[in-house]
Amino acid sequence: MKVLVLTEQKLMEFLASARTAYDVRVPVSLHDGTRVIGRLGEGPLAIKGGAINQKITSIFFPHMETVLKCSNGGFESPEPAPKPMLVVGFTKQDADCLEFIDRFYNDKFRDDVYFNKRDNAVIVCVSGRCGANGKLLKVSGDNCDMELICDGQDYIVRAYTDVGKSLIEDIGSTEIVPEETLEQIEKESDQLCVEGLDLLNAASKLLLEDKVPDEFWQSISDRCIACTSCNLACPTCTCFDVFDRTNGCGIDRWRIWDSCQLDGFMREASGHNPMGQELIRTRRRIHHKLAADVTRWGHITCYQCGRCDNVCPTGIGIMSVCKEMVEKYG
Amino acid sequence: MVSKGLSTSLPQPQKPLYEPFSCEVTAIKELTHTEKLFRLNRLDGLPFSHKPGQFVQVSIPGSGEAPISVSSSTTRGDYLELAVRKVGSLTAVMHQLNVGSKIGLRGPFGSSFDTKSMKNHDLLLISGGCGLAPMRSLIQFVEDRRDDFGRSTIFYGAKSPEDVMYKTELEDWANGDAFTCRVTVDNVSGGTCWDGQTGLITNLVEAADIDVGKTIAVIVGPPVMYKHVIVKLKDKGVSDDQIIVSLERYMKCGSGKCGHCTIEHLYCCIDGPVFRYDKIKELKGAL
Image 1 (tube, rainbow over the protein chains, first blue to last red):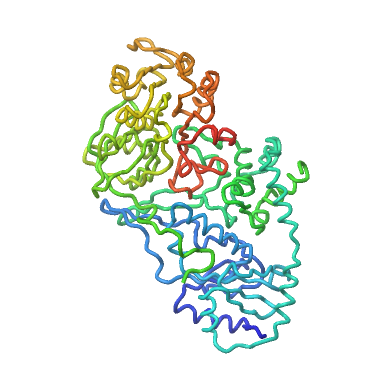
Image 2 (image 1 turned 180 degrees about the horizontal axis):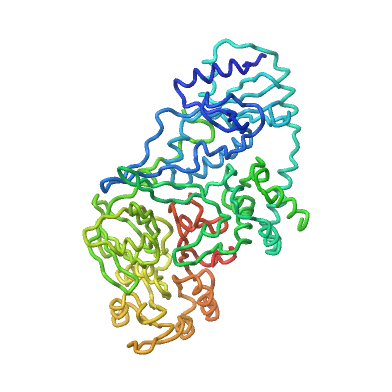
């Protein structure tokens, strides 16, 4: 059995051709070296290098977006984009995050503003020997439409859904290499450590059993500067605020990311504030993903992407907090 | 083609989630110096279909949205009433509205008082401050289905005589056959005419004659009120599953998305705002 392989040049050609049917988004390198998800051509292709630092789900839940247009006494909802998106650059963890927030935004009330972008979008994961500092990125498997598994230089292409398979057909003739390389990468991927998950599970158990006292949260919150970086980087943070803004011909209603680490997050006009203490807010950030969501959704909603730990200026990202928690109370 | 993570069998919405429907203000009544009652009709002619205890998202372009409890029962007709305290930017704009003004509404949202399980029970309806606004939707429902319920008692507490909402209706409820109605105010300032009871609402509960075996107590009021009233009810033998509370949070979406009304794993806007006390008493920050 053989597998399809694309060189980066061939991949570029494939992505360029996909633009006729899709709004193609790929990891690109900005002038300062930052890797972000952008449009093809906005910067050099930067697929290699590991997870993108930005909140990857911002593709479908952007920092700010219009949810309603108001003019002449009437209301109008935003239309779906003319082309569906094809997004390259999700890691396995990122795809897991996306799968969760798909369910979240569809639960009970379907969030059409989110699904205007998400419906029909094609998710292309990146894995294999292209992580930061040469690390192996875990192979995603079938939690995406298509996967690019890097062998260190080129990309082995796998499709999991009908749309992914039809895209592969569009690629046409490509180099075909023996499957041994893929088998070796998958074997190494399977051996990637699960220490992080064990730690999260241990912390989750402590929280569900209510074994973490307020003193712990106080000690963590004393180190929080409420910069909100954790929430802004987290792919499964979905909270938003809503505000109106006047434009030239009417009023737009926007939603904007909000952070549970801010004092005003839950404050009511009356002054009542259920999260008026910083320790309550700090607890909420961790408890929500490791305990509240376990009760509600049946699983932890942190997928160990590492973004909050990477961006937190005071070292209290979720993994750091869990490590401290488990050491003290586990 | 739908990509992974999405099920094609998922329910599709009838209407965009954040799009309000238009309503016309058909009547405005001043309830207190800070509260007004607005009666609304839908311009599209559709029914509001709300249940006692639910809320709506009031939408005023330029001022945003705010969650407001429904203060009327559908048993009174095909309209909806909102008692609005002037306390924030949107409610300040609402207080400037006139009869004939148009506003947007989304909803109704949230859980309601379970009037089916309340049937044949004595009801103890305890509200404080503007908590009487959502409670009024239940009071009207009970009044209009009188034969379905046992002995019904209304306890209402306000800060001062000036803050008492629905003064005429409270008098009607006190003088009518449907309810026993008691009103108390915390303080009476000098020169104020008040011949009613003075003191905290807990005093009314303490003095209440409750048939513990067949009573359901409903509490709606300011956050500080719940714990104290619940202690008094439990002293009288009312069990946790006989106590219903309606909790106040600032819902920004009404649909379990924005995250502003979470109480541990619950979302006040879709799982509440009406909860049975035994279901939330262990949740940190619920009360």
